[in-house]
Image (cartoon, rainbow, N blue to C red; front, side, top):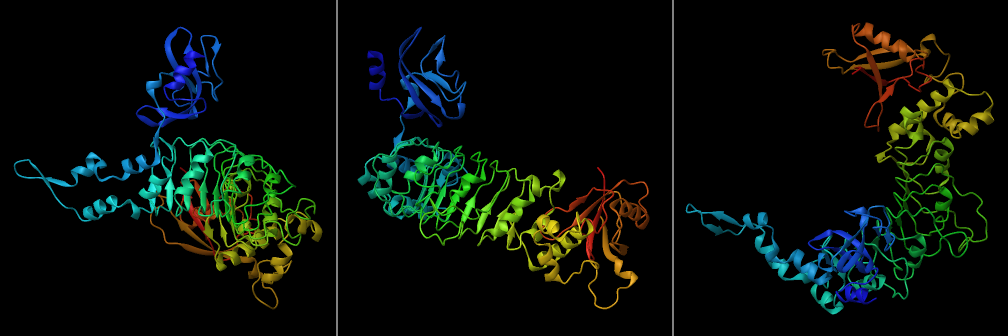
Length: 538
């Protein structure tokens, strides 16, 4: 106990955030204070963030001193080898004071005379920089990332130093207590954006003021749980954006009812990269009344369903409010979605216009997923898909091509079966005036034999093919990919070259590989006016 007290007297306490002396980027949490068997003096046991340079798991020579988060994330250090950090006002002065320019920045302010003496020059903007840095009250945005900031310092000093600060980036510092964050926000009444990324925050709030100034709060990789996030609704009552990336937050807890309540002003909620598996957890967010954007990229979601007929119990507020009523943007990239029912369910979201489902099995043709035109056709209300705008022309062509695809590969003649598999099929046929027996016709009156021919343009791009002009041919809609290759060999005299064919599509950054030899043009949904790229295999 005496040794522990001595180590604590050196300026450290259990649970305190510290960094390696001289290296603010190597941060950790104090987990032990006291002696270490076989080693003289006082020691501090540190659990380093991300296993940065640890040597063990908190046990040494058969004795456990503490339990670390990783097998090699812990080590013992002398108190002198650790730093408790600095106050925020000191960090701002260090980062922005005039005499803290780097050597490269200083060298830019001098030239060498013929006698090799440094002569000061006033570069354009130098005076403005100096003047502005003398007057911190003009500083609106500040970043003190990875500077070992551990406290707000004197609130009066901070407010007097940067009274008009609106954005503050505290990424990678040593904050852990919410009372320090609240003190900071109160000291800076103009502050609207606060980034606490990579600060290990405690998952408990004792008392909290109401902070009406903060609009954007970033808690990426802060180790917070949704239980803690729910408590932030009170102090941060006017939030517009809440970012919670990398917190392993796969469970949404709801202390009251079945849905998350509060956060009435939040428009953007970012839960990317949180190992979320079940869409049911996201349904708990469906009554956040102002939610317009929900970012769920890089999770493990397999299915998406619009919450139909939710139970009345636990539904907050007006029962006439629809689930996800104002949601316009839903980002689901890099998940594990593999069913068309999930895609079709997106049509039920009343305001949804911007969807990302790239890097999911359902959107990857190489893994048996659907090409872009199928997704565009199935998503009737989407204006932006996978970051690319869906133009009027692209939508029309995609829908017509999709109709042809369904008609060419009809799994059944039963309208109910087709409706189940392709919910928009009948709607799209009526919209574009396409009849069952005449999928390729765009003219009125009796059909001619030539109506089964479609116009296709071929472009050669292979490096050993030579310069060849694009060629347009009318071909039967039943022509297969294998037959197309044979025709291209004949059209362009490419007998000795093994070919690959790609379909060029509007809105797609890369052409779609046509690798199913037995698939026909109609089965692939390829209609008149299509462009096929002729390339050679590597």
